Length: 178
Image 1 (cartoon, rainbow, N blue to C red):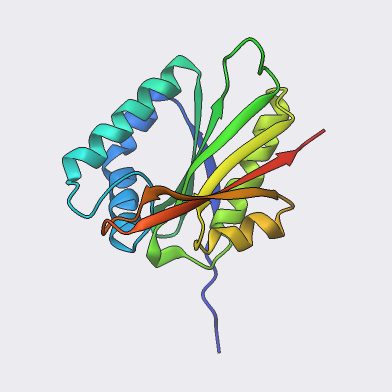
Image 2: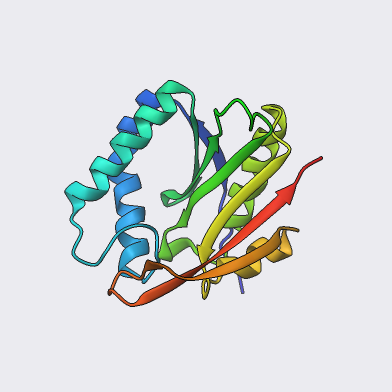
């Protein structure tokens, strides 16, 4: 039996490339919400809402505050993650990982792990040695973050809503790169 293997590449997009990728990024976000991910959007959000979000991310990328990673395999753009560089004078050592999303057609292929490892490497390159993130308390991503050596700081109940309006607790994680 021949198993199909995918070629995976992780890219860092600039502001212009992010704008060009908005339709594919919006599709990944739409797919994540449709599959129940609590990522800031509701079932009633539209493609225009998702595209507006990614255009705002492109502005953050262009300003240097956000590093946008994309994962590509034989099917095209299938995953994304953001590294937010904290610009506060008292937090030059810290960054936040946000919106680690993998399209449902490409899950369980190591894409989320590859995105996380690349984000951590870039954080080190940028002099950041403390990373933070949060995720839905029932998310499969919790297993990934634990496996990658992240520490759970705790869960805040009712922190957000699921796309269907149900309450969602958020579990916060941190990882020291020092």
